[in-house]
Length: 587
Image (cartoon, rainbow, N blue to C red; front, side, top):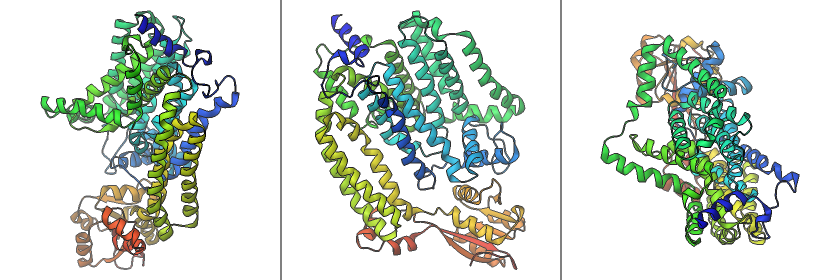
């Protein structure tokens, strides 16, 4: 029991400089007001790195097309409640908030890739701030809480999701907002903390339900079970009637409207997607998926879980989860629940764990702070040495990046990659001379590597094929109902974004529909379709985008043989624009 009390004390006093620890600890935020801005500064830097990457189709995810079209159509038609497909069909597989994210970006920046992804990158940056807040709520000292923020920022799964306009980031943002509220309630020493935290928690959970569906309801059920079993004294503070009623009304407003307006589509699409569509392949699959998700979730945080395990093994007696403070136990329950829930799905996809990754990051950092002390002396010493091979790897990767940009990049890109190389060197030098900063610098290395990699690949893979298609469509001056697109649906979506409107053409399924419609301009992604159009008297011209279907061996061979420009031209993605007689088109 004495050991349990010691662990609890270490959590609760970790943020108190008087609790002891290394003399190299970061000073408390209260002692230097400017330090209070550090979490916001880190989030702003993250936005500055990620937004330029998200503003172009350097990376894309197939399902983004649904939210691009749905949001653009909302802006142009004023129907902000029911998403539709380009064919005019109702789409209710996912709730409405992701469509509002894209529509809001389109309202601010216009219909295009930057507006499309704007609020996803903003939400990702907001998740960083909330993760810091949760870690502080768990008792993490300033340095450990900043480390939590950096951990989630640099998680490879989160990095990828931050620029993909699909429901994962909206869901994660609102679940993390709810977690922040519940942590503040459970961490408060008084039984009735400020009522505002209940509003934050329940409205966050309501918006999470409106972002992706039923998972937040499972988290609410696990919250109630946890409170009844382990923390009944906080029941009244959590279960405040007005916030719960407001959250329920918010959720019900859209779901009832959608279900009443389109009952068959809602039942078939929403429940099919949420339940039956993702059911596990069998009991044997669950046994495989459960450890698979555990490993994927833990090791997406790279070496940090191993460092925490090492600290825990050194402590005698080993810390017991029963000694953790109440909010830490709740977050651990949520992490376990999400792993178990998705073990019953039909695939192992680490992005399914995103809703609890910020909470897990906060738990990791709070645990490290509790076991190592406010100054993180042992972790800092280890990271000081780990930073050297990490920087060496970054500099090795910078060699082909520099070669790529010298061959196909512009002056600004070359200058930026030079700045990135200098940052690698600065990371190593700073971490060695100021070991207390080594964990944060080491944690940030994946973000630097991701940013430099995207910078180097941009002139290779861009423009996406939609950009020249949109230029050809504009040059043709064809009316929207006289232009058709047949072929790859992702390229069709990219073309809409590049054209800056929801419906610049009619999307048809096959060449037969294209010919039957009598369109004057037909855009196609397959050579066979282009030949058939040519046989029907259309004038066919090619458009080319960047080299997107990259074979790594061929790519590296071109880079090191100084033939990248030729290889990019030869392997660029090709599209075809067919124009009827007398119709203007690109040369």
